[in-house]
Amino acid sequence: MDMPPTARIPVAAGAVGLVLTVINQLSADHVDPSLQRAGVVASILSVVLMLVGLLWSRITPVVAERAELAGREGLELAAGLPEPLRRELGWGSSLLLTATPAASLLLLWDQNLVLRRGLLADSSFSPGPICARCLQSGKAISLVDLSLYPGRAEFDGLLPGLPAVVVQPIGRRGLLLLGGWSVRCFSRSDLTWLEGWAQRLTAEWAPVLDAAVAAVAVPDDSAPGTG
Image 1 (cartoon, rainbow, N blue to C red):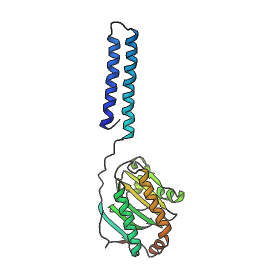
Image 2: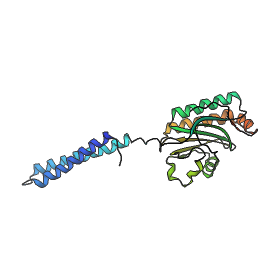
Image 3: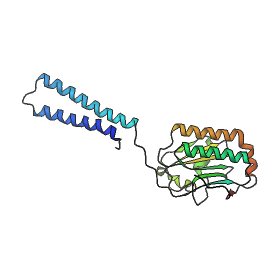
Image 4: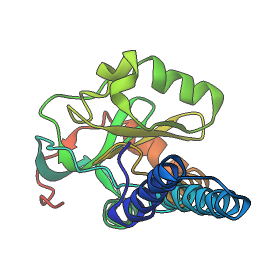
């Protein structure tokens, strides 16, 4: 099991102490009560040291390494969006990409592409069964290790090779997808930020999104590229 160096020290010290205690007991010429008591105390201390190391590895878990993701950095917005909505999407997407371990972000409304930002795939994204289940349930779906899910090919259009994905519903008509740099990278606070922005979009911008996608949303190639 992988553990941080600070956790390996007490585990190793405890294991060595336990082994030395056993050797000391076996090599003694005669066993008297004082030696037995000393052996019991030493064994308990060794086991406690090993438990401290194991608990330490839980408190400070090893951070997963970033995956080598292939994609072009950029920003794509649907054509015809009013300027206030463009500023809102720019603010929210920038916040999620800088304040969370997200590599890519995508926003759909009525299955029309409204926003893509971060690392972008060359192919288009088509929602599949996982996205449909998210809309139907109205609850976010967090895929902490995408390699474990048979339906992971659904997210190749977001960005191939993503280690983790969060699918957040926006009401019953929109989807906000966030792709992470590494497995289990999104914390509870990250998911809270994502849910909060989705609720803001639902409450304040749903009518504007309706009007925008009614005119066949097309990616705005004139939008400046940014990470």
